[in-house]
Image (cartoon, rainbow, N blue to C red; front, side, top):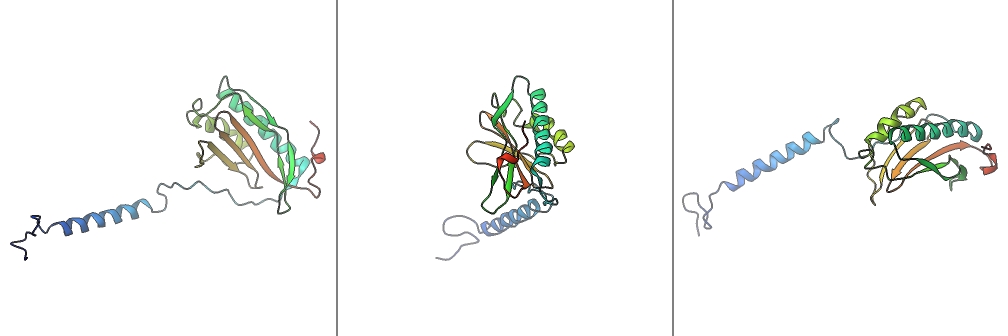
Length: 191
């Protein structure tokens, strides 16, 4: 069962190995080229490092509740016909590691915002300037989240995170580390 004049017994020529080797080399080059720094990535951006110590509850309340009010106004202006109402009132809660987290009032939209905002493009246009005014980085796209949710978030230098998530309806939530020895909701300013 010898090969006859470059042909194998099944009738194919012996050129398959060089072609296969060329294709594998090309695949390796493409893989390396697509993974160079600055190339496209599918990983969500990470939060910036926390540079500031948590502020007292009263100071955080004023700062982050103002952000909430400004974001809602911008979203309502840029998404006509969609209103936002309080979903849950402001509160504080202790974490298992002893930190105290302030949650400004969470907001709920009157309708889903994904389609109305062109998959959050309008959310970014409306919210990013407000985030900048409040010393947050711009929203950096949509986070890959399972279950049909569309989520975007931004974290400031104090570790406070603003989250807008939508799956009919949408929610605006915040988590803010605060300095409190009791972490009791009675520390929240009235209003």
